[in-house]
Image (cartoon, rainbow, N blue to C red; front, side, top):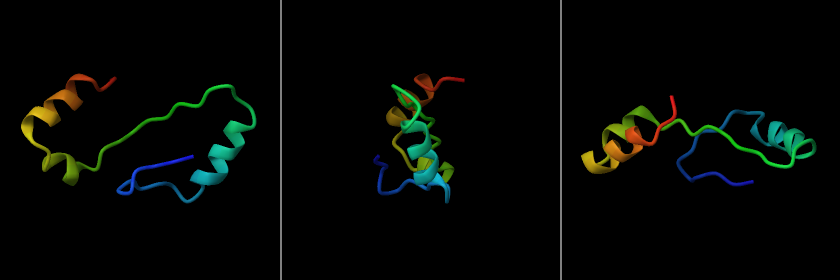
Length: 55
C-alpha cells in the first residue's frame, strides 16, 4: 500500500485496505484533492484534473 506524502487518510485506512486485499483481485480507490492545495495549482494542471475527473 502507498499514498502520497500530502495525502490525508482515514484512521482505519490500513485495516480497511488489508481487509479488501484479502478478498479481491484488484483494488481501486478515489482520490479527493485538498481544496486549498487544488486552488494553488497552475491553471493548466487544474484544468487537466477537472477534465479527467469522473463525476
